[in-house]
Image (cartoon, rainbow, N blue to C red; front, side):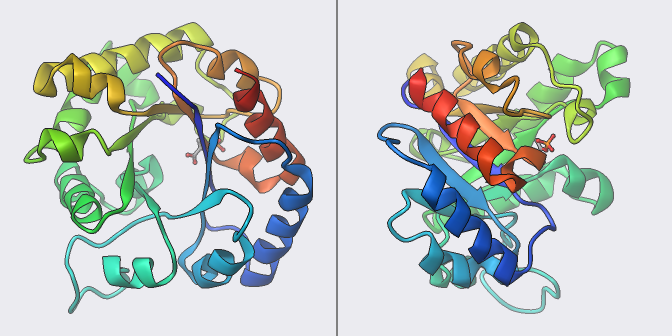
Length: 253
Ligand code: PEP
């Protein structure tokens, strides 16, 4: 599947000063990274400062959302031109916190994914089942529905630029990660869903990350799995040493 991608999701953490300070610390730790993709998805307020701070680090800048409309009366939203101006390359879409706390739906995820691709961003589309869905045996049907919805209307050329993050909701911020074998099997299922829509060649090109309590201790085993193309990291991406440990684990594979 090629080189791994390690994406940090800072969520609603870090002021501008804290963001820049963090990059200073991470910069002194990250050495000899030649093949692993790196990205930090920061709060909107930190993006401009980070585009300068990240220069020369090899870490790409990501946002945590993108509006589906180009501009206009969308209070609280940030559009593609505003993100581009800040130097953003990636954007998280449909994180479970947005789906469950802020009313994000499969349809808004589809619209945002299309807007991201139309404007040259790499969307990181989050999919994942809740604990109740898992217990009810609905994991695959939920993931299929979310994956198909996000890709609806996209050409194969656009679909292959989409990054998926399999994030079981019960594993996010809980300290309970999926086992490497379970996470790998589920990522394989998501890839099969993409293959059914676009064919195996396109599905092989899509990066599918695992996210959910990935940390310095469990990252090597998760990242070593054949179908997992990297990690979307929440809590551990707020600690410079741990974030570096995860990047170095990916780099060793
Ligand atoms: C996330 O927010 O995408 C995430 C995976 O969080 P954590 O690593 O803290 O579980």
